[in-house]
Length: 83
Image (cartoon, rainbow, N blue to C red):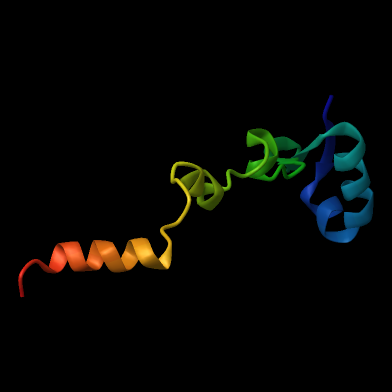
């Protein structure tokens, strides 16, 4: 259910309008007696999606253990060829 308030009420009595928004969920602002705007509570976009994905953790889960120093030296020597 929405409440109605005028733009003048919004300017002069904002705490009252804020309480209406918090209790009713939305307030329709009128200008010269005609509905003109709708104020609603702000919902952060992440609240709907759930927790953020930890991409670094997921990337590391695809890899085996890191190479040891000896394995790195051997790989380096193998890639150098007969230089």
